[in-house]
Amino acid sequence: MSTAILTGPPVPGSSLEGDLRSLGFDVRIATGIAEAETLLTAVPAGQRVAVVDARFVGHAHALRLGLTDPRFPLSAIAGAVTAQPAGRQALTRALARENSAAGGTTLVDSLADRIAGALDTDGADVHRPELGSLVATVPGDPQTRNEARQAVAAVDDEAVRLKSAVKARDGFFTTHFISPYSRYIARWCARRGLTPNQVTTASLLTALIAAACAATGTRGGFVAAGALLIASFVLDCTDGQLARYSLQYSTLGAWLDATFDRAKEYAYYAGLALGAARGGDDVWALALGAMILQTCRHVVDFSFNEANHDATALGTLSLASPTAALSDKLDSVGWTVWLRRMIVLPIGERWAMIAVLTAVTTPRITFYALLIGCAFAATYTTAGRVLRSVTRKAKRTDRAARALADLADSGPLAQALAGPLDRTARRLPGFAVPALALTGGLAVTATAVLTGFGGPWTVIAACGYVLTSALAVTRPLKGALDWLVPPFLRAAEYGTVLALAADANVNGALPAAYGLVAAVAYHHYDTVYRIRGNAGASPRWLVRAIGGHEGRTLAVAVLAAVLTASQFTVALTVLAVAVALLVLVESIRFWASSGAPAVHDEGEPA
Image 1 (spheres, rainbow, N blue to C red):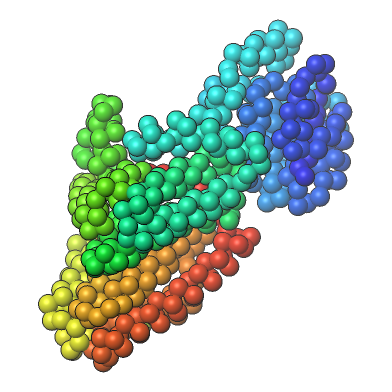
Image 2 (image 1 turned 45 degrees about the horizontal axis):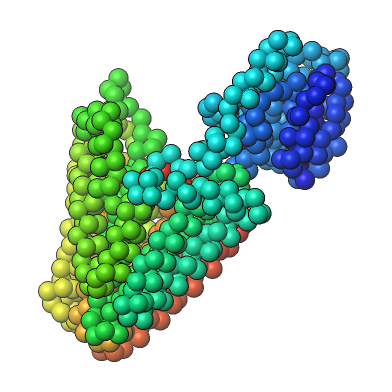
């Protein structure tokens, strides 16, 4: 239960107390600052507390946005300020200071606004939500109160709430074919007490049923799979809209939202591959290739954003680049915005394409179209980001360098080589860092493809990859193109596993490789969302335990060299299970802990 302390002279006929109770607050009345301080002290330390001016006039949703969002320790709107347990100490100090200054006298102006100002003076991070057309004010006289009430009546609170439930930047398909009705499903769920986590779980179950239908290998199963995949996506949109509609953000929800989209999509790929196999068509290599390409696309997005979100200008030079300026100009032409959002094949467009092609064609055609579309999207986005990086004059921060190092996922072999390679690394020109990562990765993957299964050459190439990748990450990744290092390393590791499993040419090798890459990819996604939540990367013990990217690549190469194809398949399966158990247990432990961030992704569609 939360507590709201109403301060200031009461207003006859005000609905404020009822609005606060409807939002889950136990309302207490304070006639002076001293009494407000006493009531604040009496509220248990583990509860949220709000100080609200009794003269407040505004929409109930404005109060909801200002007082109930769980993501912010301190939050304020005009006439109201609130603190979660993490912000209680700062709120208590600010109120005590106001009480000392006023001497406990009767309140005249807004205590809540004075407290919010004092918090700002103390340097506290006070969240102030964007209210848009919603009203939140403390009128000083009857005339302005009447005008404020008229302004409240002129704006449909519920319409604003429904509109704000939709993510601001979504793809064309999601915006025009899903959100117009999914927002109403979100409201229906809210009114029946359903939580975003329950809807997210329903979306996952629907996608898994879709994958099972695809695995039947029948035309009816493929049609049902396509329909269920769209239904899963509708629920996927609904869970985020429900979270925004009712402000039900949570640490568990952040974890589910961050990982289930990938789990659903990659499970569906596996279902398509199983269904094709029932019909005599082996497309496991295409399924694994699609997962690798999609994962590497995401790593490009994550690395670029982490490298640049806190970059600082060099001297008086602007951070803007000619490429960014062109993008801004194109944004002024409405249709180009939608075209560019569709070109990158975001999740809505991608899932719609997969669903339709599953229903009317074959798994092989579906994967061909997916690979071509994702390859074009990856080329488009990566080329644009490379151009921005080489034309923008900016200095990357230590935080960005740490994030890129964490995304690189270097293990004990790279760490052991860091000291001996340090002097050499410092002599390298800036462009050499991503070039080393690319060259070493291409060498080991190409060797695995060209020399076939077994033999020493892939092991030798993998040893070279360990050396070049260690050299690439020895010094801080602050170069203009150093954000390319993590995706190059991901492509090298995943590509080597794919090549060796395909070369084994025995039943089960590619499915085992699919499981291993899926487990490692989960670890990489988990690292990304920890960094996004400012909670640090995965613990070093976990990275060491699963070998780091270079250790796993070398291990797979050695296994292929010393084992038969059948034994190699068993070894890949064991390795996949071991990695999956380690990363899942640690991930669940972290996201269920009190230190996990209650954040939800509001950026570009994935």
